[in-house]
Image (cartoon, rainbow, N blue to C red; front, top):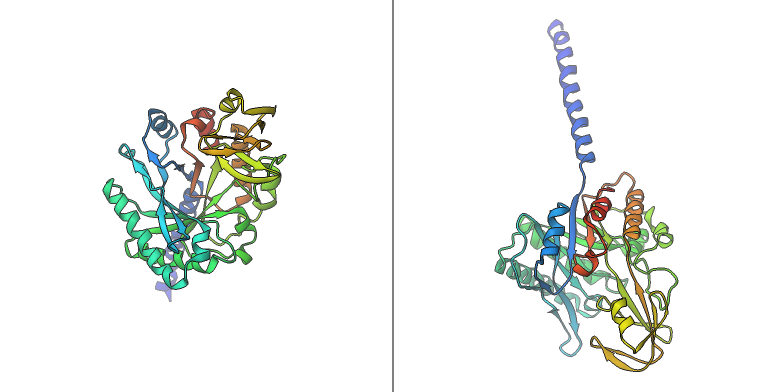
Length: 352
């Protein structure tokens, strides 16, 4: 008994050290800033000086690169890859590349359940080939699909199969998550992946001639943000750094374009300016490969640094105790970067 009593202080000291270091380790982990990332969504990688400078000045360690899309061929009744990324220059060194595949929801509405396994194999193999050709080593793949009730069964089956393939290679799978899928998680379901990338923009249906930006506005975002903390997947977050034009006809949206700019619309006589960033079409014509009909409306929605900063603050507040491991910006495009100084980008990423 005497010997046992003599050991008690040592046991207490040992437990104190173990739990003490555990607390210190937990605090260190929770206080570590998230990784910084950008999305690259063009069909051709060039790696311009401006792009390279943005990556280095903001210590961007990760690039989510869209490798290809998967669409549905109505004639052949099969899924097929489209718009594969062309590499015109080497990918940046010392930056982690995460291949992203965008899958049109129509694929999973149409594909037979029995064919999903082959689709998962085809997607995995194409990613491997593209990465190998460019000498890209990757540890994560991301899939992007705005699934619906009708496509969920097939899409989740696809995600599960692809995830198993990657696990055998020691890799992980992430999926993009829309805010409505966070708020209504019980109805929409949670995909069988390792982690989610929360898209903190585009909160609902894009409307013609809307009074609020469909890319980001705090009023709509606040309706969803409080549900982030309780979402069942570990989350990263991507914030908006892009602009687009909403093309509508007779009150219905007929398309989106990131190519049209206010300078082009102002300089072409076919468009009449109604107010800042709002135009009407004067006559019918083709422009940038798109057909415009007299009376069509054009609205330019621009993301400002103030909007992106507001999105960052709201995303952080909504996460509560849930910590994002990565904070990304969408997307890495020279036209968008011109409006965002490095200090502004650093300020947004430094919010977390």
